[in-house]
Length: 226
Image (tube, rainbow, N blue to C red; front, side, top):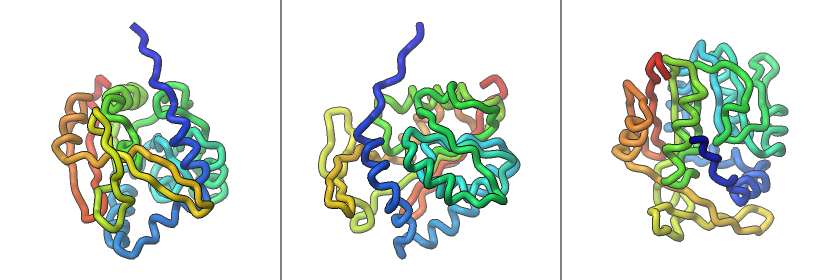
């Protein structure tokens, strides 16, 4: 039986569209620089030579790294504003195809992919929507594909504080932009065991989960019958 995708989180799209021009400032935090140097190397190496689908790519910060060694990169996002920035910032020597695309409707994103990058999107998924997202992602990839997931760990003083937890265990932050507007943003911080369980349930193999001081990442592969 066909299942319709969950409703779009328009509040999240609105928030990241409004934050577009200040989004990449988060990568300038001094305490995160050592982690980021390591992550750029890992992301570039793990996805080298692959046709990569960059899910919820935002302003293309990580696409710029992926494209240095990947054979092709397609970045999708729901916000036209962030995609415009991504296109403007992408070096012409390492082209990326940036397209409007819903993370819950990846079958509509054109291309053949043998790898995926999921950067800072897992944390914005409600716990009940995570299996559905992973299933849709894996169906979009060829057998033998590689997947790299990258997201935040919660570090007091470096992250926005958690201000609310709902009945499903999802956590939320109240964030303020430079224009003074405030937004409540769903932001989950899964444990390594939670990541392992979710990936295993979705059919991922050869899983590695690693925690750095400020970030966590997971790498895994899909079977050839994906």
